[in-house]
Image (cartoon, rainbow, N blue to C red):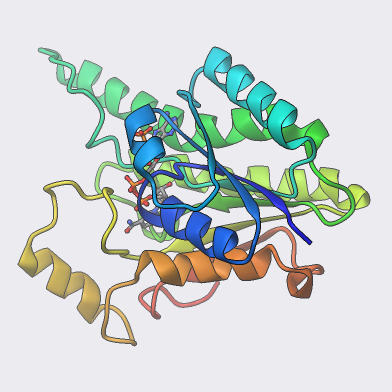
Length: 246
Ligand SMILES: NC(=O)c1ccc[n+]([C@@H]2O[C@H](COP(=O)([O-])OP(=O)(O)OC[C@H]3O[C@@H](n4cnc5c(N)ncnc54)[C@H](OP(=O)(O)O)[C@@H]3O)[C@@H](O)[C@H]2O)c1
């Protein structure tokens, strides 16, 4: 059966790899992200695209309307939009406290708000029973991320997963998050990854390799399958053992 799959951040990295897996299984995919050009060029057969800033209420309303009009019911909703804020436009500030405020607000907007707003806008359109909502958290939610802002904006999704799982469970819809460790071949790190840092991150794993977008995509695909129908309200870590299960 063809499923309707909405993927935010679907034009690059983990979201794109996930879209490719669902499309390869015959599902209809809708890719969301801010850059229209990136979405249009994404190599996902038959994918629909809608460019929108999902941290903005107006953008989310437009994307949700597009999804409802084009797809009807949404079987799988995957939130891959996000980042550390490093790729966002630089704002010049004299005051260090203003810089701290910007960093926390940017992270909250792109990681937490994008996922919460799109979920709330599409909640009534989720297929029932059998619908799936999947979030992208991070190993940082367990460990911190330097300034704390990125880690906190991902950790904020965990209680939302639990509340939503309780709310949507009676409709036969599961809600989970996947928390990856270091994943290569995405835009996430921009210029911020050097060989020494990469080696340190790989050395933390038991598998002795970085994660790939495909590793995360396969886990998301499994969580969206009927086989995972009794798994809900969980944070599933995909990190090669870099952070042990808890
Ligand atoms: N790579 C890793 O090591 C790693 C580890 C743990 C967790 N994660 C998480 O995994 C998810 C995917 O990251 P990735 O590694 O695949 O990085 P990526 O290639 O940079 O993907 C992030 C995507 O989010 C989209 N996006 C960002 N802000 C948005 C907004 N306001 N509205 C709509 N779309 C937005 C971006 O597209 P536009 O800029 O065009 O909007 C981009 O396509 C993120 O949530 C990230 O935090 C990544």
